[in-house]
Image 1: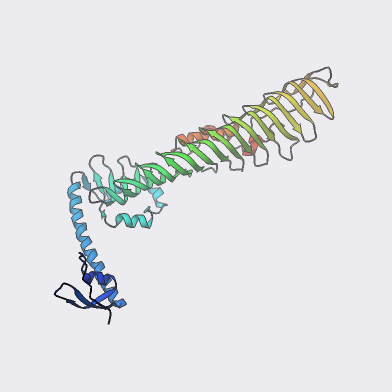
Image 2: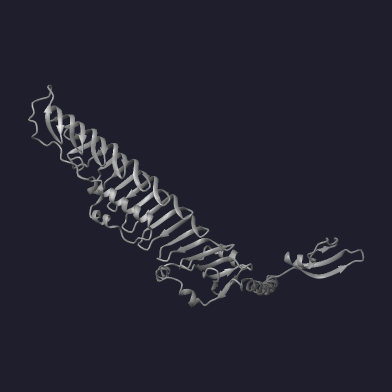
Length: 425
C-alpha cells in the first residue's frame, strides 16, 4: 500500500481528488475525522489508467469548447448581420483576376508557420466567404467572436487586390499581397503595406528581396531583373541610393555610390575582360578624377586624369606598355592643348589639337606637325551604362511594366565589354 497522510487538507478550491490524479495517484480510501482532518490511502496509477483518464478529460474539454464555439457563432452572427452577407466560394472566385489565379497556381497556399496557425486558430471561428456592405470587399477565413478577421484568411477588395495570410485584430500582418496584374509581395505587412522583411515578384520575373517601409523599398536589399541584370545594396524610396553593386549579364560590375538609381560619387566599373575604371562618377558616366586600366592585350597600360561625361577632358596622363606616354591637356577624349609626348625614346613638347601635334616649343625635338594622329578618338563606351540604368529607373518607378522601354532595346545588343573596350586607345 501507499503512504498514509494525516495532515489537515489546505483550504483550496481544487478538490483533493483532482490534485491527487494530477500527480498520477489514485484515491483508494478516504476518512474524515471529527476535527476536520482526513486520512487518505493512495496508490500510483497504471499507464493504462492514466491514458483512460486523459482521454476522458480531453473529450470533456472538446465538448465544452464546442458549446463555447456555438455561443461565439451566435454572438458573431448577431454582430455582423448589419455589416454584410455570406456568399458562396464561386461568387468570391469571380472577384479574383485571371492574372492572380495564374500566379496562385504556382504558389503553395500561405498559412504561415505551424505555431502561428495553431495559436491563432485554436479558439477562432471559421466561416464561409463574407461580403461587406460598406465597400463590397470579401473575406474568407477565421474570425474572432467580436467580428474581426483573426487567424488565416483571404481578403479581396472591390478593385480586385487580394491579401492572403495571417490576421490579428482585423489587420493582416504576415502573408501575401497580390496586385490585380499578378505582381505580388510576400513577407511582413503593416496596414496592408509591406513593412519589414519581404519579397516582391513582378510578372516579368523581376524579384526584389529585402527591407520595406510603408510599402517602399528602404534599406538593404537585392533586385534581380528578368534579363539577368541585378543590384545589391541600399535602397531609398525604391531607388538605388548609397553604397551598392550593379552587375551585367556578361559579368561586368559597377561597385560604389548611387543616388536615385544613378551612378554618382566614387566607384569602380570592371569589365568582364579585366579592364576597369576607378574614380568619380556623375549621371552614370565618369566625371572628375579617375584612373582607367587596360586589359593585358591592349597596347595601353592606363590613363590617370580627368573625365567629363565619359571622356578624357582636362589634365591627364596616358601610359603605354612600351614606355611611351602623353601627359597634358585633353578635350573630348583627345590630346588638346599643351602637352608632352614621349615616343621612341624622344620627348616632344608643344600644343596638340584634337590628337595631333600642331606646334612645338623651342626645346622640343624635331617633329613634323599636323601629320601623325597620336591617339584615336574615344567612342561613347559608357553610353550603355547610362541606358541600362535609365531603363531600371523606369521599371522601379512603374513596377507594372513587363518589357523594357524602346531606348533600352537600342543598346541591348552591346555587352558590358563594349562599354569600356578600346576606351582611350
